Length: 418
Ligand SMILES: Cc1cc2nc3c(=O)[nH]c(=O)nc-3n(C[C@H](O)[C@H](O)[C@H](O)COP(=O)(O)OP(=O)(O)OC[C@H]3O[C@@H](n4cnc5c(N)ncnc54)[C@H](O)[C@@H]3O)c2cc1C
Image (cartoon, rainbow, N blue to C red; front, side):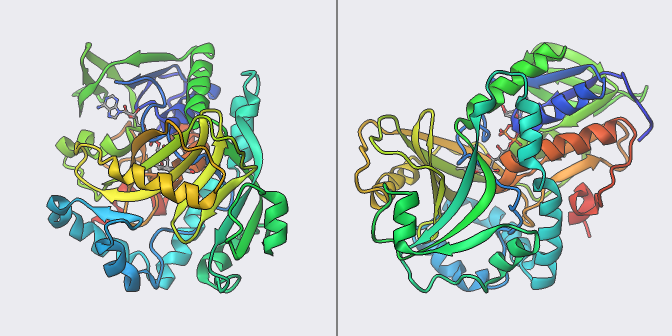
């Protein structure tokens, strides 16, 4: 991309990804307009599990996963579900997902994930510096717990990938687990602890605090829906919104799960799924967790947050506009009670958010070939909170005509056409 410093940039989507793009662009001196139809950070970026791990390098699709597919798909109370009417549209994505789980692909995907995550804690600290809300990010361990004493540490591929990127991990016994997390059930037989990461004590507030920082640095935040984007004859981008039309030299699409819809009229077809997740938050839990806790039997993550003790998880594939199915969130109540027996479960709060998910667990980042001035930054699936700062930095580098010292091929939006 030609150097375009100081040309205004418009970003569609003020989730954590769009906000981090805005901050990095402002740091480089670009005037920034950030457009969202809702409050900043009220999409998937609001209700997630708050895990910010520099060691997030294990893709969702792994070599042996196919063996579990029938059980995962047909267990109605299991961690994965598909709305039946969505199945025909979901099938091609599932096939691509399984192909992404071949051992050779997994190694390459893991490397590309690691590029986006390994500096995330430091980058968040820089973004939060000076906001007065630096303690929204806490140093944390990530503790994986299981009722199964045969929990496959340290040899399985996922742990080997984490070890390769230097994750400081150790296995701890039941009494050590009890010392670190006394609120957890005594039924857990084994636990693996990963050090050196962080957790958000309110992912939603991180977004709103950083959105305020965007404004304080001179950025503009506009609340309106974008209906259409198209290139105009002068090489600019025309954005049609509720508020009318505007032109911009450079446009960043960071609209999470809704991004494919904006790109479809440009004949850009991509396998982006709406992978819905849910959380339950207990506002008066009566107990505290000191770290992020992943229950490996139920595939959920719990953490103490400002809004209460939150358990987040489940993957539900559905049409983008399908009504939430809060039964999935209600399942999390008894799962959390099983994890934390003394938990006060009164007045639980339920939430649904949509992960923007590609079959290979990687986002699309970069300028779109054939469309100068159009940059994409979306598709972060389960890892968007952790990958947002680096995504923002890359988007800003590309907008300024720089060539990031990173192999961008794994994030190419055209990678699915071959
Ligand atoms: C249950 C759950 C747990 C998770 N846990 C973690 C975790 O622990 N760690 C982690 O790293 N990640 C986690 N994730 C994933 C993470 O939350 C997402 O990857 C991330 O929030 C995606 O951010 P985003 O900015 O791309 O999307 P969003 O936050 O969804 O933002 C997209 C924004 O675009 C706006 N928008 C869309 N279309 C338009 C339009 N046409 N006009 C105007 N505005 C528009 C929307 O209003 C929205 O605000 C979790 C996700 C879920 C659901």
